[in-house]
Length: 407
Image (cartoon, rainbow, N blue to C red; front, top):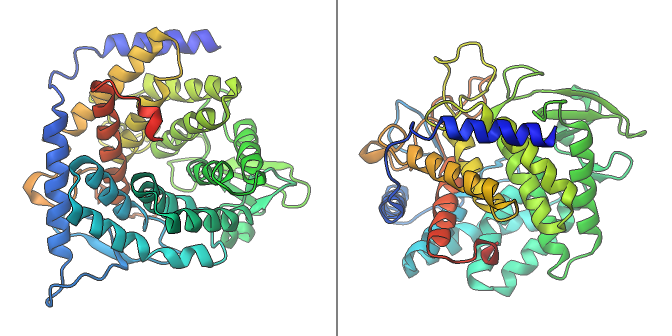
């Protein structure tokens, strides 16, 4: 199966060589992001020229032209992405004004390090913000906040199951301990904490979660369920299902993207070959089914395709993941992954997906929660976060720098 998937993946890439004729201008793309960051900051100013740093940009619907902001609290899982965007823009520009704004938005999330874990999203909230902040500043306060938050996230781990409980509020609804694919991304904070002064147990929890998810969260063709439900006491796997996808047996694009990014990161932190092999398998099944512009429909199995909405956010996550994954695989496959990432970013950086002057966000055409009718064909902050992350990773590769050194 391993070699069959590889062959199909290479056939896919070969067949799509001529579909993206544009070239990717990284400096232009990063300058575009900086311009839109500055525009957002200006638009966030209130009448007295001040900014409410607890209000985080979340989305702009297709019919709107300004960010809809949400209060940073334990239930707003996207609160860490805007500070993360600011940190990435500071990394790209070295603009000290952007750094000061990044610090202020980041520090509005400190309360989460002192609050009992509400759900699994603490990694998104705190590692995208404080994690990038610490990476770029070495602020010791940031380090301690990350360590405290990692300890809080670990309280949701159920050793009988072997995973972190994603949504405590949904245990009764789903009939047991629930773990969603998104949770794979939150493991990075546990790995980081374990090697930066935290409890070694955090590493073990992250590995156990990844291994258990690998065992139960995927179908035979390596497409993923969004949600896996387990018996909270015995730990037995009960069922796989969807929450935000088209159907229980469909490949929800962003869920598969989380798997690609997550298992790539887990291999980086463990160097366990089973995770590298699995990362390639979940990647290849996604790449085989991409449309010609390299941006997936929100769910690969929506019967409305080709009239279904696209999800730029999933494309951004995968582009960034591929630029890491290409470091770990054999040369031929490395080249194909890197080329695909460039083609994804080229497509996203075209007039079809850029907001241009119409909105202060970076990208159009993402989907948040289709079954709930929420954030459909919208600009969404996490698409912007992974877009600028991927651009910076590609720039480092083109400059001959070690991408892994900054992870």
